[in-house]
Length: 252
Length: 121
Image 1 (cartoon, chains in turn red, cyan):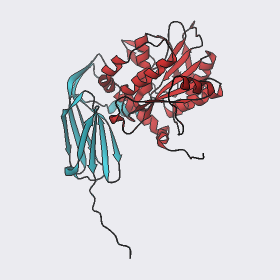
Image 2 (tube, one colour):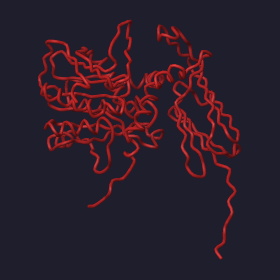
Image 3 (cartoon, chains in turn green, orange):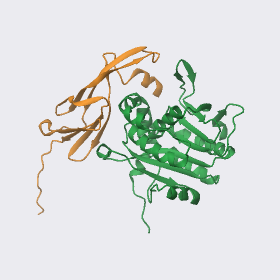
Image 4 (spheres, chains in turn yellow, orange):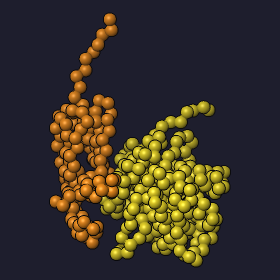
């Protein structure tokens, strides 16, 4: 199963028990927008990419340079890693992708894995500043959330890449957290990404970036993110994302 | 197949119009349609409805130029959003209501309904 998705890292990269920030396309593109903004503002270096026969056969051109849309970044001293994608994750790739990523996080001795996601809410247009909720996968992760005073989800289904990411990390005894910012279900949401970044900053003093520019340019970002939003919405319906609106059976 | 479809069906037109992201929701007695309209002011939105369609045209406050982009079109300027949606059921255009907040246009379209009260014998 591991060969289906391959992580290709540059040689000589040193990791020092990094915090991993994962921003893959999902509802509101919250993770992708937040992770891209972090990488750009913190000037992180590209250290590798992820490839798979299950991904759409697409490459991206940035500044005239051919690059993989599924990339890995790191800070200078190896204490923070960012995983981001500019293309939607096909439903068939979710299991092998999360397995391979969790194996790699284990190999680089990741201290904490933080997935940035959106939490779709119907009344988003009436919310000025989206709130952020969280899911932690073990006692240590829950402790971190309590320390940072981030409210966690008490009941509910979670679906898609981040749900499996949490589970694969649990199987490898890695601490993992999903930060879920209230967002538009099918529209790109830079406001939600800004709220998510504010929460991520609580986990690493190194993240000194300001979200002002993200909020100022929100309209332009929404415009540029339309096509990825469409691709993601198509994948999301196959990933049972609708289940996140369902109530699980209450037995307590 | 999916890639071919996407190449043929771009979300922009050469005449400077962009297709907005939108969502149609059936709420029983009415249909909710929302449109994501970044860079648009309320006064620049025009909504036209018939019994079976809703059409939105929204001029952006600033034209957006994407240069040195793509293999199909190197430079293009967009000035407006335009989209016509075919509705799943007939609606009453005169009773439609719309609101615009935080870049999202929401239109409530009441369905044509002729309710008959049935008495139980």
